[in-house]
Length: 241
Image (cartoon, rainbow, N blue to C red; front, side, top):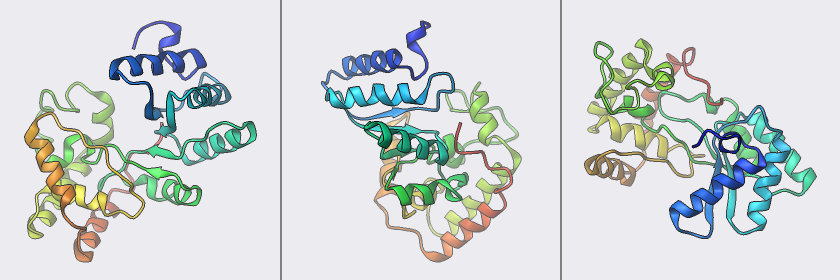
């Protein structure tokens, strides 16, 4: 990202510039999915949707998508798109994991009603669900939490560390690692279409893929995970920005 007026936000010029830059970096003629990363409260959403529609019609973007939008905002986008003849987004990337389940109250029912795919990010809560972090120690260098106020504000709390230990116990008693439990829980949710995985080392990717290949968790384990979640409902971060 640069510092010019066309390097930020979701105005027409900024979107076109960003897509062209992505095409150049990827050395391709089109993008399968292009996400609006978060709402832009400065530029009109009509301008944003018109720009995305231009890119779809030009064959440079196949599927517009959204991330970090509230259900009502995506509903508004669909209403404007239908009224204006624009291509609407049918793919979304919300924050969702066994510790942060705010989308279950409103967003998931909305997505099901409108046929919007759900591809969560933060499946391991920014790394908290690896079990490698401790509230008594500073965040590990190189981790999402190191010098990152956003992620510390989201997950770095006593309640979450206590929940991680509860989940660790559940995982051990089920013969699984904490990572396996977390990913299998998420992949087993009926409205999750795919999951965005992140890894900084090959062995992390291998562990993630191994967990993804396993079957769903049994009902007893799921019920125990629900018990942990009920204690977090009052402190869970909101899913939209």
